[in-house]
Length: 444
Image (cartoon, rainbow, N blue to C red; front, side, top):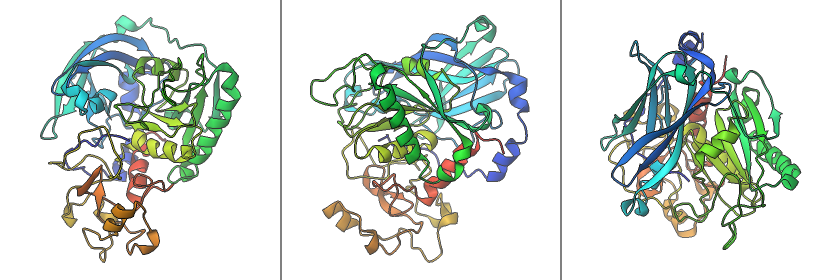
């Protein structure tokens, strides 16, 4: 349930590049210490303008993120930030991401008013004075600098890491956080009396997550910890009419007017609780039986724990969160104002280019598979059902029209995928994208 933002053509980075980067962490040791700097800032604006203002800087605990691949090579996300060593001008860390503000900016409401959002930039703690450089895609899909802040780490050297007093339990511990993919699961809408229920829900969704490739084969690459962030009242806002419980993380249905979409605007509170452990990716588990959730690249996911589709929602949203995978469906309502892209989308798994030589996933396409690839599109749009038995190219990688909330002009790699339907299977292209990102976090 995430906005599609077009970008320049994805440039393929070979697995050799990542392997070479994994040979050592000399850049990390030279420029950083083993803790996390968190810059809290206000991101405000409207449909046509935006601005940034630092709110606070803090120690967010032990660094558990990338230490070998410091500059993300994949250019994913609507935004990105760079950490630039002030003395040398060298970029020593980069991270792409998407945000709640970035999604809100495409809604009708953003054309009528200004609004502020809490946001954070988290990165390893620099040893020396640095510049935080924020970039965003412009109308031609080129990253442009939109904000720069110079920060002296010595001014915050005495800041102690502090997080709310909470119970923490590791459901899976495979190794050092700097060598593994670290997932933290937070509770929203669970009271103290619901703690056992939360434990059961965490285990259920972990089981679902590791039942799906590529996560199934990579289970030993993960650490998974649960943080028991308790609310005073059970439940999530608007899971039923006129229901407004004081859930601790502030998650709510009807985000941007879409009933099933669940986000929170309390990012600083979410990060405070998550910092109880080192983490790379963040899950907010919702104590609700109402279908819903959401996922934003390098921010967090939310997932209802007790709906009949809970397993699907969590895995699907993790595709957004970890690797920025696009929604491939196009028949469901969304709050965004969606138009045909003028440029190639940045996501691994959708394309607007049908030139076989330029196709993102051309190495996976068999010579006998036509581009575009025919499928029972009219029947699907008429009945709302995908009959795999009727699809000649089921299981083949091609270019199937209909993706990214658009019936025409965007194409997905396979006829079916968890990013398209409620299938619990990522297509081959989505799996490759996920693996590329996960490889940056794991010591080999």
